[in-house]
Image 1 (cartoon, rainbow, N blue to C red):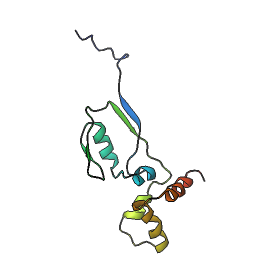
Image 2: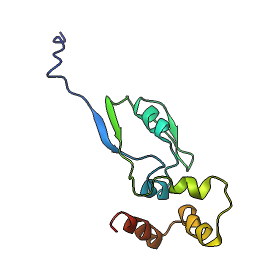
Image 3: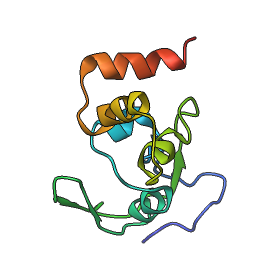
Length: 113
């Protein structure tokens, strides 16, 4: 027999540290999923990774917090919106598609300046 639900004693499962493609570190490690896709994945929808792997939770989670880093908001949009950019910025933006440890550390320093 299942006991009746007690709203003040229910157990919920979730994740409070999820990133979308807006976070530079997540993007560098291959995450190209939008905010909407992150929430859809938490609700149990399948998601395809950059490598083509289909991932899906065995059951949806009860809550999720997408906690993207604010230091580089808009940076990927500047790099990849199709606007003609100066050569120096093009070289910088290329680092997102061909990441290295040096590039990662350079971006990371923006948040600690």
